[in-house]
Image 1: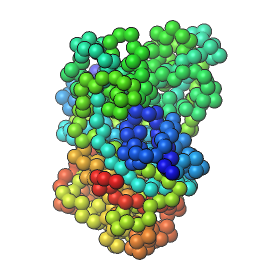
Image 2 (image 1 turned 180 degrees about the horizontal axis):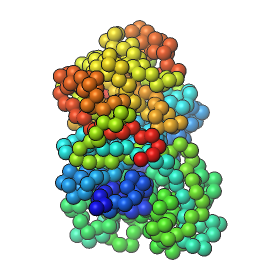
Image 3 (image 1 turned 90 degrees about the vertical axis):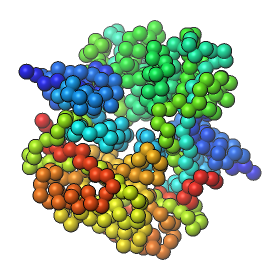
Image 4 (image 1 turned 180 degrees about the vertical axis):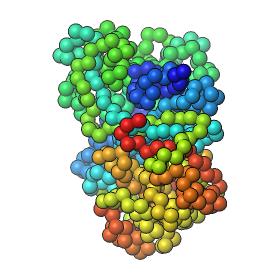
Length: 277
Length: 277
């Protein structure tokens, strides 16, 4: 029986691309918000769920981090890294010279700013609610229009690709998390994501907590502090490190850290992305 | 002579509010992009510039961090922390019951999602390029419409506020940076922002670099790793710590860190925000 896979939709977005890549045979269920994907997984409405977690240009996807920090019964089961390629697309027969309006999500318009200024200096830029909505807005436009969206949206909406890879920066990649009720069994080449915070902001406490990793020679892949939402000055720390939470060294580090922290949560141990599934 | 102040515009945004609060007598110059504000300051077209740097819900403003990392001749001179209050506004005489369309920037629509679902379940949500553009889109709408935007936008566009503070989360605050050619002289209650990276990702190197702060009892206020844009696995580390870069202890820590890092840049020392200017 094919698995069921929730994803942060609508269809035609980069997250749908990641979901299809992850499990081409799964039954896909788009959800409107990242929180709804989490709810689908934790309530067992679907087996797993795919959400973006980090982009090389924009940084972390805070909705996803906050969901993982807050919700119990939700773990990172796998990670997927995809290049983000924006495509310029239009209704069949549209000539580039005629294009007066260009639709996209404001973030994608910003990522293609230099391209748009160079190639379409007099076209009006219009905001859409998602990259996928941009294609439907473009199709309904009475003035000659184009949209910036993923390749997948051109297939879904049956429109023509005018130009590929129109983003300004060459290294635009997004890391997606596959969420499940439990995390992944050890594979020998794993990563672990963990978050923690402290009762008081004493000098050196983050340093002392990091020493638990350093003395055991555990490499920290990423570190980030997120405001707690209570106030801008209080932080939750998020660490990605190498290894699985069941590895004896990492297990000992997490136990020591748990003694020091007022809150500690393992967000999941999962295979390190190596470019293929 | 009043100073000149660039800001990330257009008029009617939260950044304009911060700029007016920072210097009510300054001549304000809106710029379309965060990079253009940086350019205005580094080329001396304006004395200073105001840009958002961190939001309590959304995290860091990566465009601003990347600008500070990349550009020389640009420092953080001051920080300002403002509560972000979204207002629902409409053309005079519009009745709430008649509203069919609600315009805002997609990020603001997301921050008011629960409010909109509860109060306007059947209204269509429309994306605008900025909160300020949302008000002008709303004014041009032929169907009865509202916009979600800062209070300042209602003044500028002469529209009516229907409801104040319509955001879902109570603690939505944004930290703004005032940029200048040089950073601020010591005041005795300062913060310093610094970024650095390493040639190689050796286990423990970030920990050893943090020890330079810890052994000198310098408190780390914030730590963050940003992808280098070369690849998702390589990071630039950003640290906010207490103290001024001219304080002897912090100066010594930065000198030691400079020995270890392949790149180190002080983004600025500036007075810690205490709630007033």
